[in-house]
Length: 67
Image 1 (cartoon, rainbow, N blue to C red):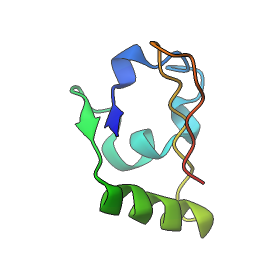
Image 2: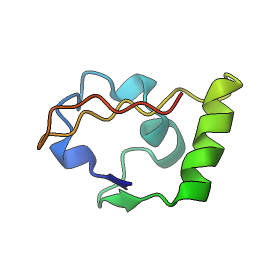
Image 3: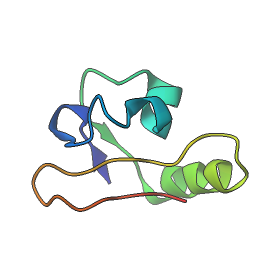
């Protein structure tokens, strides 16, 4: 999964409650997450330790959430 905050439609709207901002403070370059990293974020989010991924892809407009 490629996460690019610069192309996220929800940028500046949902950043405060997004795991990427919490863990990486809105990285300046796109971030690639492999399946293990996605699973780890899912586990942390499910346990309430971090917020879910709130990425809204600018290209598809689809809401992506790991929860």
